Amino acid sequence: MERILGTYFVDGQTIEYSITGKVGTPILVMHGGHSNCYEEFGYEPLVKSGFMLITPSRAGYGKTSKEVGENLSKASDYYVKLLDYLNIDKVHLLAISAGGPSGLYFASRYPDRVKTLTLQSAVTKEWLTSEDIIYKAAQILFRPAVEKIIWKLASSMSNIFPEFMFKQMVPSFSNLSYKEIKDSVLAKDIDEIQRMNKRQRSGYGFLIDLSQTKEITSKNLQAISSPTLIMHSEYDGSVPLEHAYYADQQIRDSELCLLDAWGHLIWLGRGSDKVNERLVKFLNKFTL
Image (tube, rainbow, N blue to C red; front, side, top):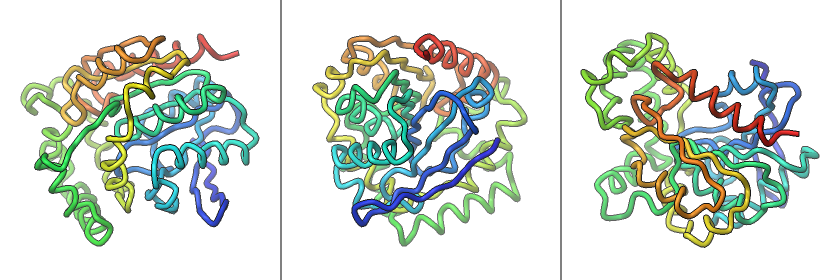
């Protein structure tokens, strides 16, 4: 896939972004946690189907200024500035995992810029709180001074022991055991996890994500007017399935698509091609 990298400077802030696909109907991607504009899960099928993906590194990720993420409102304003800079009027909006709140707020604040909204394994309400063990661990492991070491170690271990690392990471992605999912796992899934660990970084971004999930409210979801597709695995071990049900209840024009994918990473495993086909069918329905 051809990918163009860019940096947009505005108001003293920096927004790093990538454009994947030479031409096509634009999709604005709000990537998930620990990711950036180098994300690639699910990109190839969309590019082959005639779409162009614009992926800004969200606030605190990559080279994007952490100040952009002071709150979801401010972040949304900066994403609009980026679209204006790229001379793009309306987009299909794709929000993934911890990028869910960013996508939901953007769709509610700028309905005239959004053709459709797709939520994939997305956080749609307050997620981890200060009472959760995972939240407390994240404050230590994913702060800027430590996270680079964590991801370098994960990448190194994945290079040396790819299958072992895959098995170790399964509980963070799926409610099922490795024994229960092994028949659904493809050989390329282990390679994809290895590649993922090489590009993952948290920067200031993940801690910003954790603080922003409490900003999204039912009013934001109820204000969304664009057709919305909600895709979520029934076995998601990262973002509980209740987030998908909640979004479906609150968003007026929504369609819930429950998947039997083995976990949070719905682009992997047997049947993942159907996930891509379903998304392309939805997008084409609203693409002029």
